[in-house]
Length: 171
Image: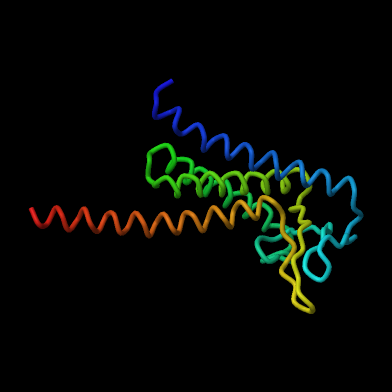
C-alpha cells in the first residue's frame, strides 16, 4: 500500500466510525425509549428523547407526502460521492478531508435510517426555557461539524491559492 493511500485510510476509518457510532446510539434509543418519551439528562438544558424525522434538517419537507425520502437519499449519495472523490483526488486540505469524512459518515448514517425505517431517528434535544433546538442525532452532529471544517478549509485554500496566484504574477 502506498504512503498516499495509507495517509487517506484515516479518513475512511473516520467515515466508518461515524456510521457505527451513529447506528449504535440509534439502536440503543430505539430499544429503550417509546416514541416521544423524554429522559432529562441536564435539567432545563438537555434531554434524550425519541422522535422521527421524515424530512431533512429542522424537519424541512417532513410533511411533503413521501417523495422527500427518495430526494434526500439521492442527495446524500451524490454529496457523499462528491466528497469521497475530493478526498481521493486531494481537492481539500487536511481540515477539508476531515470535514468531508465527517459529512460522509453522517450522511450514510442517516441514509441507513431512511432505508431501514423510512425516516431518520433523532434523540438529542437541547433547549432553554421555552426555546427548543430541533432534536438531532450523532450523524447530524458529524454533518454539522464536518460542514464547518469544509468551510474553514475552503477559506484557507482560497487564501493559499491567492498567495500562489500573486507569486506567479510577480514572476
